Image 1 (cartoon, helix red, strand yellow):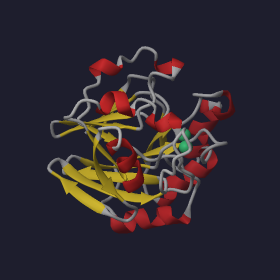
Image 2 (cartoon, rainbow, N blue to C red):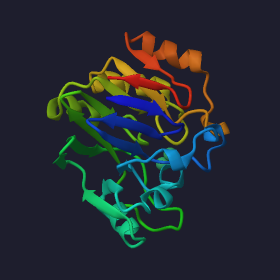
Image 3 (cartoon, helix red, strand yellow):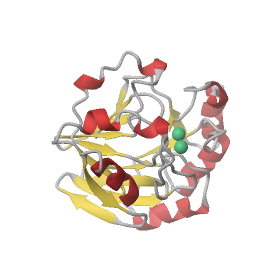
Image 4 (cartoon, rainbow, N blue to C red):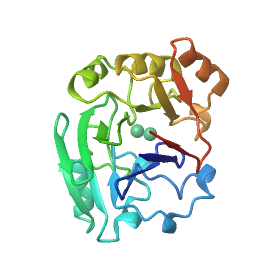
Length: 226
Ligand code: NI
Ligand code: MN
């Protein structure tokens, strides 16, 4: 599994010949101005919730009929009305695609579209196949439900956690989240995009290090492998 950080909570996951893009927020993000939406060519869009900083580029990317949105039922319905194809799920459910399994897990946050439409409950996802297992937390607070993930999913190779505070957990809480999900390799996201989520990255790395956890902070466009 190859994972490329594209800013905020946007990641391209490449595995078994498919390209899965999470929460596309590229054109409104000045930090991601070097990324060309037209070259991303995802097969799937994995959407954690309906907030604008997670769905901004969905319609443009899903206008291609070969793109499938994987998300909560309400979000998939919203985009179905806009002629986008989707696979609706809900929290606690999993589904095995021909490239791997996706399990929708709890997130403690809110979820409404920028136009006010109800977006259902926000979620995280755990995706796995024989190449690896990755937890995409989405926007969430630290929650005790995270302790369930090691019980109901394969061992995690990577946890993608928000660390920017204010709208989600900050890095101190995220370091505890990493312990709850029993993952010692974390990719930080949802930080430094806006002033209110600006963090000191050295302090963030130390907060994880003090618990024996590696915090990876990638430059936009940079890739890691699990
Ligand atoms: Ni949000
Ligand atoms: Mn957000």
